[in-house]
Image 1 (cartoon, protein in one colour):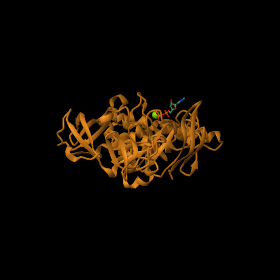
Image 2 (spheres, rainbow, N blue to C red; image 1 turned 180 degrees about the vertical axis):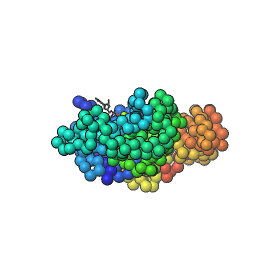
Image 3 (cartoon, rainbow, N blue to C red; image 1 turned 90 degrees about the vertical axis):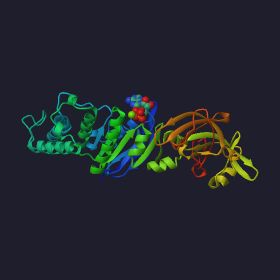
Image 4 (cartoon, protein in one colour; image 1 turned 30 degrees about the horizontal axis):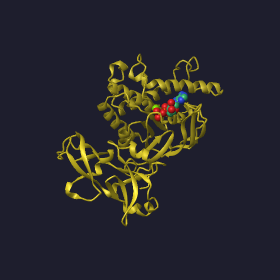
Length: 394
Ligand SMILES: Nc1ncnc2c1ncn2[C@@H]1O[C@H](COP(=O)(O)OP(=O)(O)O)[C@@H](O)[C@H]1O
Ligand SMILES: [Mg+2]
C-alpha cells in the first residue's frame, strides 16, 4: 500500500547539499509533517520523492515499489504547492478535470507508442483530448466526488476569479484528490492564506485525511502548524532529520538543542550553566543561581564537574515563588514585558548576569512591568544539553 520510505537520500545542487543523507518511513495512511526553517531542504526532499528532482544518492520507495529512477507520472503521488496556479479561463470543473484529461491523453499516446491498441480514443489517437467515453465518465465521477468532499459542488461552474482565496486553495487540493494517488505531498499549501483561513483550511485538510486515509507528507516551516497537524513530526535542519516522533514526545523530550529551541512558542528558556560541586551536591550554577542536579542525571554529572552546559526549561514550568523563599534554586528577576493573552499571561523577565527567562502564568497574576519577582523551575521538567554537540543529556 501507500507507505513511503527515504533510504539515505542525498540531494546536492552543485556544491550545495540541500538534503544530507535522510532516512525515514511514513506508514500507510499516516499524516507526517516535515517541519524546519526556510532553506533546510524540505522542498528538495519532496521534489525528489515526486520525481521532479533527481536524487544525488540513496533510494526512494512508494508503496512496494522502488521509484528512485521512475518518471514522475508513474510514481502515483499528487503534489500540492504553495503557489497553486489555477487556469483562470477554466471553470472549477475543468480545473479539476484538467490533469485527468491530460493523463488520459498521455495514456492513450503511450498505448499507441507501445503498439497496443489504444482504448477507444478519438480521431487523432487521443492526442488532442480524444473522446474516450469511459474515461470521461470516470473523470466526472472523480470530479463530483472531490467537489462533494470539499463542499465545492455548487461552485463547479465558477471561474477562479469568482472564488475566495480559501475556495481557490480547495480547488488546488481537489486537483490532487481527483488523481486518487497513493500519497499526497503538500508543500506549504496554506502559506498564502490569512491566519483565520489558514486555521480553517488546516482543519479541513485533517478532516480530508480522516476520510480518505491517504498517506500524506505535509511540509511547513511553522512549528505550531506541525504540532497541531501531524500524527508524527519530522524536524529537519540543514538537510538532516533531527528528530522524528509524535508532537507530544518531540515537545516533551527534544533530543537536541535545535529541536528544543525550534518547537514551542514562546521558545524553551535556555540558560548557560556550569556543573559545580557544592558540599556533597552537584549543582547547575549561573552566578548567584544554583539548582541541585536532578537525581536522574546526578551520576553522569559527577563526571562533568566544571563543564559548561545549557539548561532548558519551558515557560509553563517557570513558577513564581514567594520572595522570602531563600536558597539558591530561585532566581530574582525584574519583569520586562507582560503579554496578556486572555487564557494566560506571558512575562519576559531578566535576572542578574543578563539571564533572560520567559514564563507562562495564570491570567490572575497581576505583575506589571518593572515589578520584582522570584521564580523557580519545576525540577521534573528540566532539560540539559551539551552546547558543543547540541545533544540532550536529560
Ligand atoms: N534549484 C536549486 N539550485 C541550487 N540550489 C537550490 C535549488 N533549490 C534549492 N536550493 C538550495 O537548497 C537548499 C534547500 O532548499 P529547499 O529545499 O528549497 O528548502 P526549504 O523548502 O526547506 O526552504 C537551500 O540552500 C536552497 O538555496
Ligand atoms: Mg520550501
